[in-house]
Image (cartoon, rainbow, N blue to C red; front, side, top):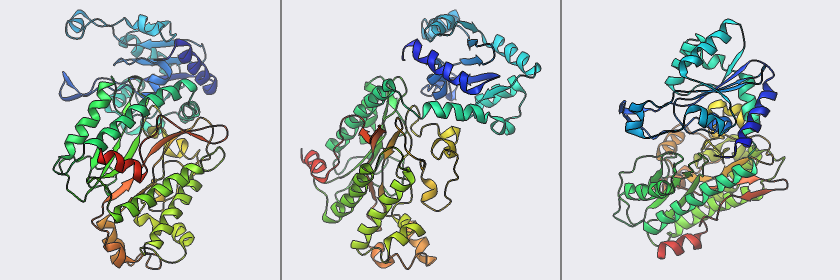
Length: 461
């Protein structure tokens, strides 16, 4: 948690952007796994954390734009709660720590919102993503769950995005803590992987490092020999000699800021010649993208430049043919790179994705509908303070090979007979995190091993 002045300033800026009405920022509740008292790991709503800073379930923040008054509503622990969970400061004590003086319980919140609604006041709220929020808004505002996100405040969404997209110096410090822990997670995986191990052994060891730093994983760990499946959360395979292992994992600090890294390494001590060729090509695309990061450059352009590096390399390997500028424009490269180069990152691993990718990553511009390019989550011009990932990948997906070949798709650019020879290759990517500066970009956290030489040195140790 930052100082109370940070949260006071953030709320003041938000209040100035909205002009009138009531801003409702809901927190999260505990979420049961299979019965009420056996819950999932509690994760507070990111916007509530950003503006009110309290990592406690069952809270709701109110900013009255017209009067300037701010409230936090929630219920204090009863003696029964204290017996099971210990002593927690009162809502009033917690609120004072983030500069909010007015508090109340949940019954008082219900009365407050219904009074505002009956008075015809505008109540701004963000799109929901959990059923508990839908039920609350239905009870408070009388909006049917099917209509809740249609009625979410666009003014509030844009105001929140315009603040959270630009990371402050204190936020960068917190993100770098997360990245440093994430690097340790990846180095551990590189050190321990051996033929005969279960993927789950590596996934467990990686997650343990995040937990040992009093944090959590920022997203479910991807630890797989089937790297061609982009979000593969299955951990039941046995590592074999000749496999590549792909790890996509990041730590989340106790303050909820995230790191997001990917690594690919051989299960053996060294890459095979084929693995090394593909890995190095992917790394070339990665490093080229990094060299282009600077304010004013549209990220979509950087993505396409990275795609061209991959396409030219595939042509050198005999897997593609023709003019590679034309191939990338047509989308033929998506046979090997069917996703985006990177995304915004901060309190959310895909920062504020629930507020609308078209606003967060595209500044209101329409996204492409082309296969591959439509999965690019960030396309807008880069600005100082943006934190983002760079993560090009090369994937050999047998099902995609077979589908496109059967459709005679991009036959002027793709050599299907050669591509078929790689159907058991799997996939690879590297991923790092950067902040855009006034004149370029800065790597966040300590460097992660990524060159062929660095990776093989760890694998031999």
